[in-house]
Image 1 (cartoon, one colour):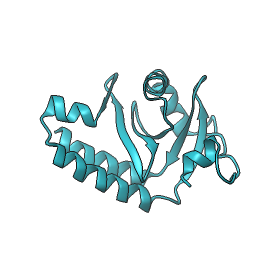
Image 2: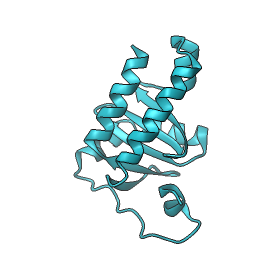
Image 3: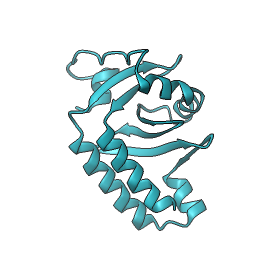
Amino acid sequence: MGLFSKLFGGGHQDPPLPPLPPDSPLHARIHDINDHLSKLADQVRQPLEVLPLPNAAYVFIGNPPKRFGMAWVHDGEISGFKALVEEKGVAPAEIEKLAKKLQDAYAAAEDAQRFSVDLGEHKVVVTDSLALTAQVDNMVRKLTG
C-alpha cells in the first residue's frame, strides 16, 4: 500500500500526514508555485508529491516508487518526461533509465518527513528531504542540459 493510498483512502488507515507548518520555508516555496501545482493537479487528476525548491519544484505524479510520472515547475512552466523527448530529443531509453534512478532515489528516501498541503480543491504531499531533492535535481538537470 503506497503513501497516497494511505493518505487518500483505501486499505488500512495510517494517521493522516501533518499539515505543513505555515512558518516553514517549504510552505513559502509551495505558496510561490501554488498556481502551477493547482494547474498540474487539475490536468493529471492523480496524487502529487512535491519536492520544493526556491521558485521551482519537482513533482512525483501517481504512486511512487512503483507507478509514477514526474513533472517539474520552473521558470513559470510545467515540464515532464514528454517534454524531454519532444523538445530536448532525449531518447525514450534514457527516460526509462531516469525513471529507474528516480524510483531508487525515492525508495531510499522512504523515511523522509512528509506533510500535507491544501491547495484549495487539491491536497498534495510535500516531502522535506534535501537529499532526495538534490538527487532528483541532479538527475533531471543532466538530461535537460
